[in-house]
Length: 259
Image (cartoon, rainbow, N blue to C red):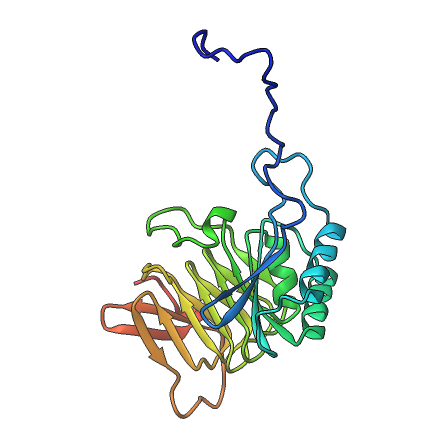
């Protein structure tokens, strides 16, 4: 403090609370575009040295759901914004069960934590993993910036599941019709690719899509789009889809060389 800004001795100087956050209003719902958004507090709130525990979050969630001020319709879809909070499959299931009791349906999880993304995807929820808390409700990074580390998932994507990641996505399992994989980097499916796959989502046409069995409903690489042939081949081989100036081409992985 400068010498010309002194404080009278009769006025106590009270330092701000470390978190600057009301611990009784961390978990909250808000309506957004016909869906319901459930926001959890981040684990790292500014200079907070005492973030909310899972028990406190769970208690606040039950209080919100059991309260009388409900403003949603039954069977409303819920998007969970977990930010940087680490959630395992049991905690996600507990949240989903509590929502179900309130006639709500957990559909999608937004997170900056790899472990939370993996837990959500393997539990059957759509996932969007982004690098930092700040990016969860902001536009994604501009093209040319470094991508996130690959996201590895050992699961089968069911119809209605969608995985988004600002790097490469590697799935050990199948993607069924009605599912979607959207990656800023490459897409590798160590199984059957039968849903929608979009690589190079931010415009990188050098990205690739690889699958042990290529049967996509639609594939996209940057701004190029292709659909699966009406008559599938009688025999499948590991294949790679790549973009050329003439459009998307698919070739056997054993024959592929970067054009």
